[in-house]
Image 1: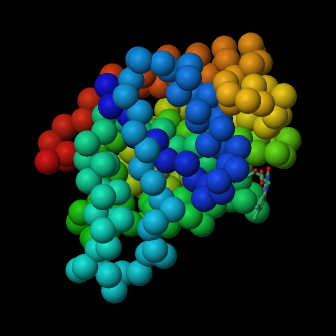
Image 2: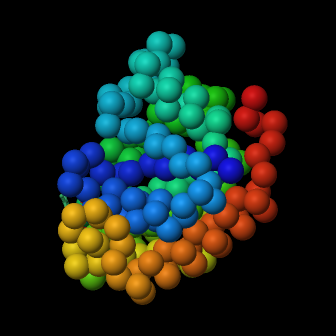
Length: 187
Ligand code: FNR
């Protein structure tokens, strides 16, 4: 199984990247994980619909190649980050060439706030519904980041509760992907 992932943060220190690495560790060889980078995408402008930049072409190509997608989103001002929304704009255009429909998707997110990205994830779900993506409903994965849950040298998840939660989420996500095999929209 080939699973794409998007980190909704551009920060080199991103706690969402750290959480995703934790998930990757828990997943092990159960799936091939490939990153769909969003940091080189310019701000979406429909004037470029006829001449997509290389970064956007690559982004859309990878969307065609994956069996499922994981989005690890921060929460910025009670919303998803602009960089993530921007990537959704690119993937959905030009009109009639939306690359997202049918891709089974799961959302996780870490923030330093108590709500653990609940509000940004809720908003993201609305957009993914519009993009026609089957989205994993449960378990939700809201995470209030604590650096003590990760090994300071290797970045490995050291907290047993977090490790278990990530494992449970991954198992249900893989079931979700298997229940929503991709079809002709891929070609
Ligand atoms: C935040 N942060 C934040 N946290 C939260 O729980 N709810 C929020 O609405 C916000 N708003 C917000 C806005 C902006 C512009 C920034 C930079 C930060 C804090 C946020 O959770 C923290 O910076 C995380 O580290 C962001 O995730 P990444 O970028 O490290 O993955």
